[in-house]
Image 1 (spheres, one colour):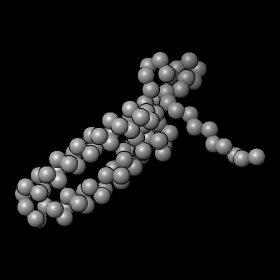
Image 2 (cartoon, rainbow, N blue to C red):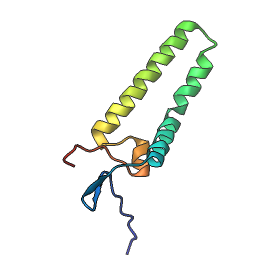
Image 3 (cartoon, helix red, strand yellow):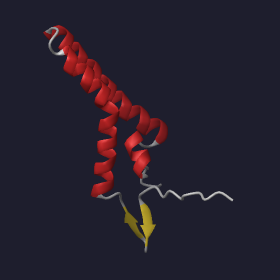
Image 4 (cartoon, one colour):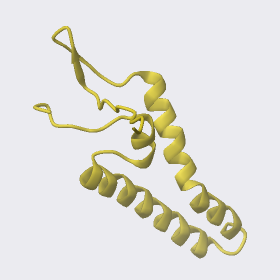
Amino acid sequence: MFNKKKIFFLPIKIDNETVYAGFWKRLSAGIIDMLVMIPLMIIGYFTQNISIIISMITVVIAALFAITYIIYFHYRFGATIGKMVVGIKITRPDG
């Protein structure tokens, strides 16, 4: 009835060898994750001319958001938004 696309999360075993995500998938995931962070970069750009204190506060908030984003998504879903889009998932060695 519905055509469901199968998503294989890596590493997968092919001929008893573990296959990991390649360079292009990881690069694509990184670019997508960077696009998620663009609003913070724009806010940081506009606050840099106001004062040094506000700029430093903005940088600290952006860094905390980035760290929280990565840790939360890896803990909750096993992947960030970019990794989910390209089909990469962080797994334990036993799968």
